[in-house]
Length: 166
Length: 363
Image (cartoon, rainbow over all chains, first blue to last red; front, side, top):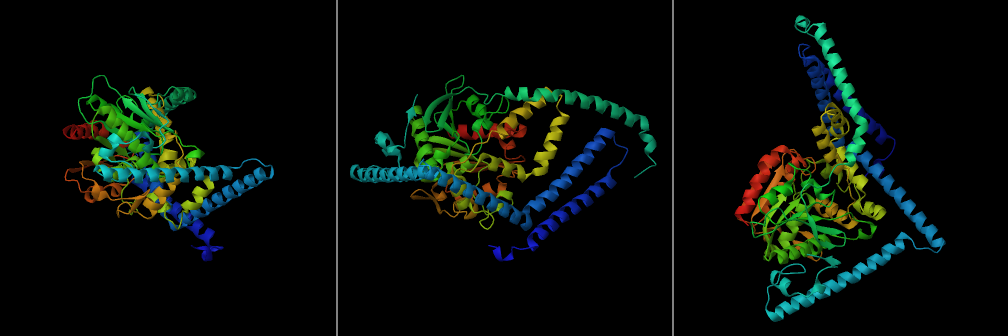
């Protein structure tokens, strides 16, 4: 992490990188202007110029988007967005708790509990299926199913099948 | 500037061009107010289908075709968790699904639906050993075959590869389309931006739950900002008076903007285990209680890649054939982008007929 290097230099470095990119872009565009001949038909001439300009711009932006300065700026922006979102979430949770209503955190906790229970039940069923396979001498596979067991497995072993239609 | 040849194109020609272009410009401008209405008429999906299986938000689409299937082994297409799957059945003449249906394959497509906040705890294990497993079992039972062929696109390909490694006995053939396997390459911008020193995915998922659709959309736009934000609208405007070009544009744009969020835990696992730690290619990828070992894949594999893919660079897909134990391995790489690999003209003419031939010999 670069917290120690955070300071007045970073925005300046980012701005210099941005300036450098634009400087290179303009010089490439100037070179394009010198290579084109006025003998070509006007619409084609304009399209070629435009295409050349966009190509130069695209290359410069590609370099900029790969630069450490851009990625550092992106990280700062992301961290700010995450911090803002977290602060908003916490505030809403607090308000909901104070008004004795259910908050998103409470729903998350319940969902996680249900998921853990589901995982424990499914893991237990998988163990039982594996032991059954051992006893009956069927092929074992990875995961919750195997080719042979799939033909004989009880419906309970497959995950939450709400609707099945032919 | 070369002035000696200025007499070859006198001032009159430039004037004439200016007038012609002005009229063309006015014609194109006149089309713009009708664009919104025309975009509402875009049809999502070209080939007729029925929903034959549902589980939570997942829907399994079956494409019956006009004739009964000619090949015994059914084909299940596993789309990515990002964006909607109808890109593979975009319109007539631009449909991957239709290629397989017309060639007599019993074709199914997984539509993952759009996850809500309640789905934020779904993991890769839930998708691979849960949903895909149940779908494959259902299709096998319905078709009366012990195995099915899988075709995975992008993230769907990565999950299909994991499923095949864990359940090889149930997969007859594996086709991967622009699939990320080895994430160590620095060619793609996403690989750079997802580095742990720049992106804390744990904090991101804890704050946002699911990965927002808008965030994904912005990330994809920023891969080629000049092309996406400047060149594309201008190129479109130049063809605004061509109804066929406008329809093509609106159809693709409808899909591009039809974004869905990605379930939080799946997003965390993809970023952490694949983009940041690159565990799949090391045969250390955890999926639930299991570790995915790509060497357990022994079925015929076909790896289709796009040479100009910014989202999943070729270098990310290419190592797959060397990591599996299959004897029957083939690669196809064409000069196209991530989406062009599916719906582009060259892909429709060359890649999909070739893929159908390959699959027909092994079904």
